[in-house]
Length: 333
Image 1 (cartoon, rainbow, N blue to C red):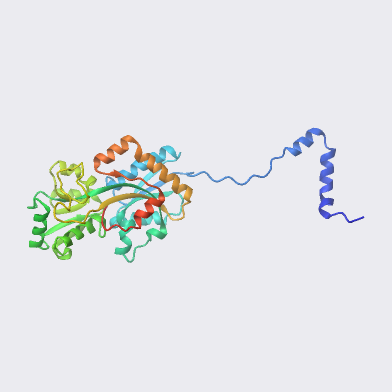
Image 2 (image 1 turned 90 degrees about the vertical axis):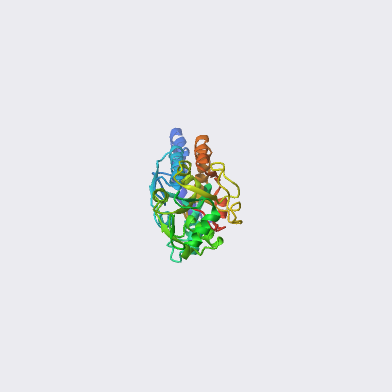
């Protein structure tokens, strides 16, 4: 007689006990639940934090708050906006890159996401390595605006004035290396006015304080996204000399394009994008992108953004990444 396997010997008492048990006990034994794989933790399971690298009232802040309100409604958790301005948006963008709680996202602009690595060798984050694109949100043309006291009625007169009085006029931006800063440098270079000698650059922590100083005459000029200065333009507090778009914009149809004003090939746009720390799971990124698109597609939100001068360009993570890596030369949020 062959030897009985050890496993069979160990299993026999249990099988016998089950067979001798009353029918109810047998049914109970057979109905024991089988082990199930662990369920994925629901996300988000606590409030989200959305970092905006500019002050309240700035254009990225307005876009970010529209997204945050929608996310709070559909994800079952509040989405709290945190403003972290400074360094042309680099400080707040770095805060998103270094977040490890799995519940931090942000809105940033093309300066910190696209041009900053080429301008700041000591940048504390790498947009490609440390951040995950979620979605483009909006883009907008920029306006070259001056204080009414500046004696230039068009772009040609402005450039002639700068060339004739190097160092006398000043311009503002939301930070060194920001899109508005680079756009002005590019414009001056194309207009024959070496930027380092032609105008004094005054960096600010965001649009609101810069625009206030422009209205007060403490700075003479600025290149900024149209949405950030349209009310002041309509009120006559500033004068627009050119728009950076390829065609005139409906919000200011009287303002010529750079090409029409004599500077061809210099069109540029500012854009805002939704970002997350690198390593956030692809499923979460896709969900955030889809909800961002829904938020911006809401008729009232879209109307408000377009009236302010934005164009809604919401996209998926892949489309957002492609825009980042084109490294556009100019544009601020």
